[in-house]
Length: 138
Image (cartoon, rainbow, N blue to C red; front, side):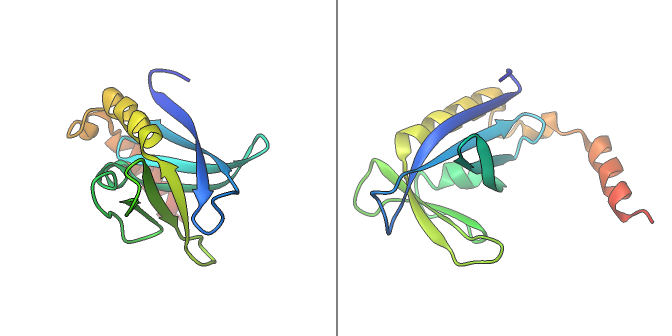
């Protein structure tokens, strides 16, 4: 891990099976300043990875946020937990509990690397254009 990337291992619990903990990793890279990744881990391998906006995760600390593959909301009854709902590409949404403190710690570190509103300073627009042109070129 460098000062350009952070990772944090977290435990998630399916809302319908809270006795069945799942290992996951949150990660953030300065080179992709608007996004975070949530990777489910089995053994030593990441099995499923969801990418979504860092601000969605931050907004979800206070109120329900998100409309697509990932939503985040405070737990309705227990302040110490959030509810993350993820929708697989070919499947049904499933909800997970996450400890608020772990998510807050991760976000504090991510905003320490790239403060809110300064993300644009870390974008390599030329590299993004080059990559996009490679995708559309015959």
